[in-house]
Image 1 (cartoon, rainbow, N blue to C red):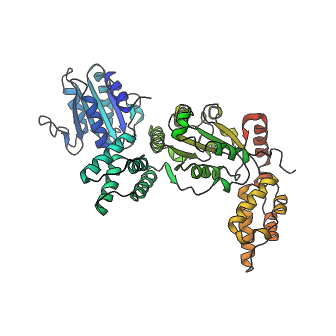
Image 2 (image 1 turned 90 degrees about the vertical axis):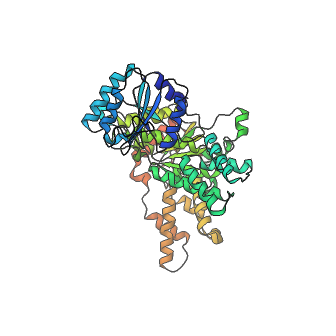
Image 3 (image 1 turned 180 degrees about the vertical axis):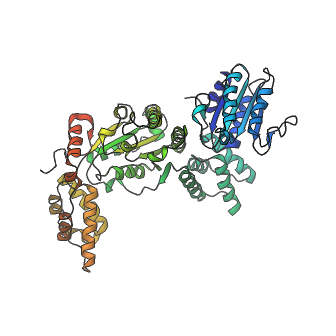
Length: 501
């Protein structure tokens, strides 16, 4: 995979006239462009913004001030043999103007044979339909570990404080996924508050990261306290996960193991798929990012694709991590038939290509309830390490689920509950429905000013109609799909035919 510098220089050499780069790191990007142009002859960098016009050159200072059309005319008036890279800040705000749009399309033709490139820098992609064919979108990734380490060492050099390699590495890991500006800000805050950087400051960096991720409105930094032991049943799935507990270590790389790619968990609602995603993160000591797939789909052309690339860049910058995509079937149901101008199809294509080709240690845990809605490409080998079917818990697994919940709720008198009877009397109940049954039983006991009993739990269970009975056809289809060998069973003891008539 090419670096930003390699891809940018290739576009310059190939005479791509109009390049659109989406980033909030304007200063860092302009420095990167300046470094690229040092190796290229006859390429002067011109920088324009709406307030000051063109800058950094006395002959052109102020040209195009408060006049975006004049900024483009300036490019057009320069002799054909004069090379230049024209950086236009926040120019996406003017693209809807018919005169700007027309001028850019005219320039897209005339600049193909000239050593000139127009670079639009914007915080996000906003491209009207008529410009999609002439603008080339380029990603500017977040800073690498090496860039972050250099910045930390530069700040430390200013304070004269020596730091151990271990703490520097921990600071770098904590700061991955942040912009350089945010890293400078939080480290400067640490130095200003106590004159140096302490090991405890890692938590401040992590809090800055949480804020940064929340502001994307695509990913959430999800706290994961659930453990593998909190999952009742699903022994095959748990064994699979435990075997891969050290697969992200350097020892595993030296052994020749690739990074685990991810899991697709397919099954009935309330059977522990989401709980499993959280438990993986906690057990493997990896940050958990939750993707809101619905927010990927923006209103403007190009924005959804840009958000998808932003999500990928952020997840890879935070790697190793777990990326949890809940109910992926709802996002990509009927990809080809959606009347959104192909946006869903393009987002799905970008996402599925990344799944197949990613080399970064981002472990993707996707959950789905409706296998019919998933495009066939999602189920193809190579997207995920494994596809597991998470069915209704068997009686033995229901015992384990009751035991997990009651051990947490009433550890002091656990033995007073007849767990075997409870498991026997709740056929077709999912884990979520068992939890709801216990909550209802607690209400019964609390309302009568006493502790809840086995009989209260059975009374609560009798009032709940499990999903297995209200959505029997859908569940039977899922079970038949899994029985045909399309997925690995998450439970050792098959629950494929557990539905009661």
